[in-house]
Length: 454
Image (cartoon, rainbow, N blue to C red; front, side, top):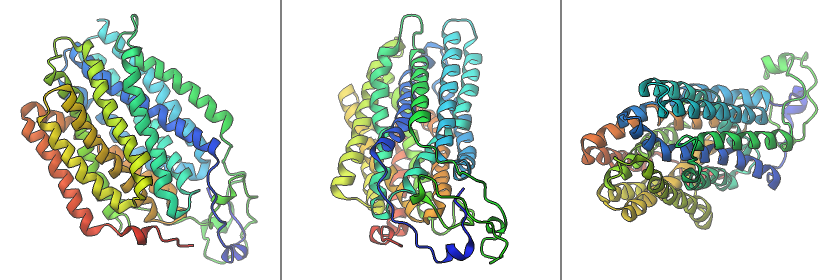
């Protein structure tokens, strides 16, 4: 919740100049996102093999994530609002705790299924329930991290700052698949990555609690300054003392409630939603495609290495986009979004006809390069479309849009792919082209978006 000041003083106040976030804090924020990203991509690299070992159809493996994604959509805006009231650090900690508990339970239930202690279908149902904890509570961390960065970064630098945070996901998707085969241990088997990343999550949570300064408001807002901030009531209480992050202080009273499809956000939300569905379908298909085209269905344990290699290629391409192309070319939100989605369409078309591990990895890398440009572009565009006081809500909407893409899109992509390669990849390419055409007509220019509003 924003610090509250007497109304007469606030009316004349000039917002303080924003300063760069200290490197130590950026490292902690980066670690929060990196840990969850690495864990989730490690899970993605072993789940096709786990599903095959359990003799469960591919589409059911994909659907096991749906309930978690739905909870993410519902809960992310709630946690984003709570981050404005309780502080960003508290919500990051809650998100990490949700990650740790979810991964521990997911790994345990799958271990019981693989060991024959539980029927395969029952183990998958328990996995889906445990995974929902990540959707419900893990969704607290990304909006808090995004809001923390966006509210402390000048407008002209926000695309690059958010791209840096987004690149933690990219780096995580390199580390996760790279480590996953090494974590397939004798006793734990294919569930080893779940336990080990849960332990890494605990270490990250401890570092966050110890090293990131507390940003929880010192006092609750009181009086009519909060209830009716523009009434001019003389009964308004004196405000809180500024906390250590005073550069983030904002005019009291709070903005109106943001909605997904209001005029300022609509183009970015529509692009993010449709493009996100395309990306989710590609990720859903990738692991199963590797097993099929390399003939590894009969030996699923051998599939973790090739699947991890393909995911790593995509992750490295994502890092190239977010660490290299965006800052080097100084791409704004519109340029990154449109160039990214066009590149992704080319990569998906290549993936549809790739037949060996090298072409599959190259094609997936090209698609990931495109999505690596597209995602930071649409995210920063959403952030720049609203005021600084609305960053918490905007980050919640961004997280919800991302989560909505994973409710049914991966399962739909896998289902279409199992029936026809043409249907699966054709739909993904069509979604990319729709985003490009719609975005070219509706997205604001980068010059207008990044103009400093003072």
